[in-house]
Image (tube, rainbow, N blue to C red; front, side):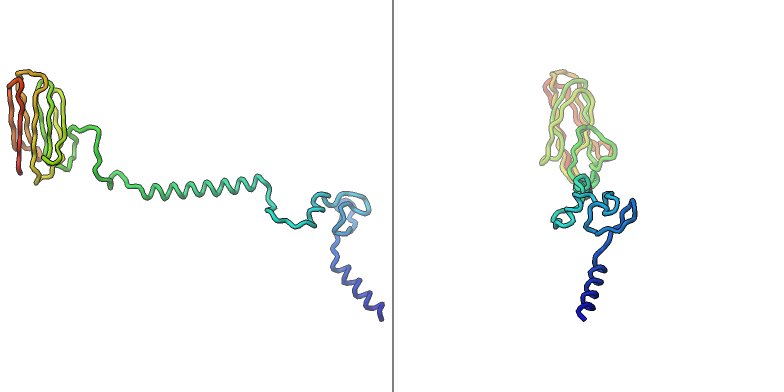
Amino acid sequence: MNFNKFYTVKTIYWELDTMVKCPRCGYENNDISVYCENCTYPIKNPQTANSDNKSDNGWNISTGKKIAIVLGIVVIALLLFSFIYNSTQPDNKSSLNVISADEKVQEGSNYPYQAHIMYNGTWSGKVGDPNYIREVSGHGDESYNLDCAPWDKVNIVIEKSDGSSNELKVELLKNGNVVAENSTTSSTGSVVINYNY
């Protein structure tokens, strides 16, 4: 009767024990065997056989794969940051108070006033709304768009810088039409235009 219990336990033991076939001769070896018991062909690498019994606390991925994963995450984060940054920046159409390097007349200005200075010599002065005057200077004929709305007052003061007796003439244009003009031939003269809409 005890024999029967032993047989049952041994059968269960053999069913639980796994076997590994040798790739060379086909002999069934115990799964803990490193070499085939029949032909001594290596079944498992001895280093991996020993590491099977150890607990693995780290990743089981090679170092190159780890680096590739980290670099991939960094690249995705940079692309995401770049997209968010560019989508939050104003474009040229929505930004205000843009100052161009060329203060001379530009086509399609939103302001109706333009100062046209005609003089064969060097001159300097101030043009614009009395609250927002800007200094200008030049040589010869030049035109400037004025940052004045249609309802603003416009002041222009231009004087000769070279002491010539040539005529200095200044015109104020609104929407392309002359609304005020003044001139001088004095060697130290200046031209003043004060215009109220």
